Length: 62
Picture 1 (cartoon, rainbow, N blue to C red):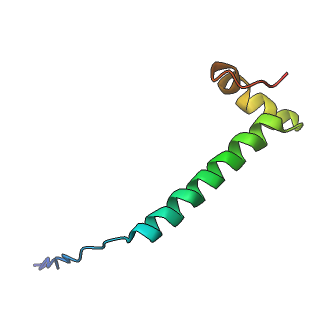
Picture 2 (spheres, one colour; picture 1 turned 120 degrees about the vertical axis):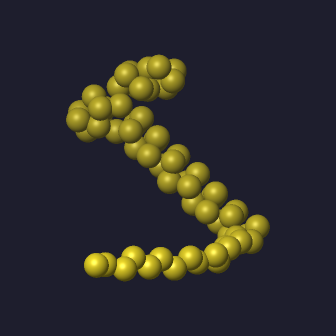
């Protein structure tokens, strides 16, 4: 016979405005870096992997 016990943690985490702002800015920088890396990369594998997505988003790659 096994006894299953569960503990409930009801801790609420609140992020301050400055913490949320830091996360938002960091995510924006990471996203922009990925877009520009894929958009202006001369590596053929990266170019081909993102080619159709770039054209559908009207991002110039030629």
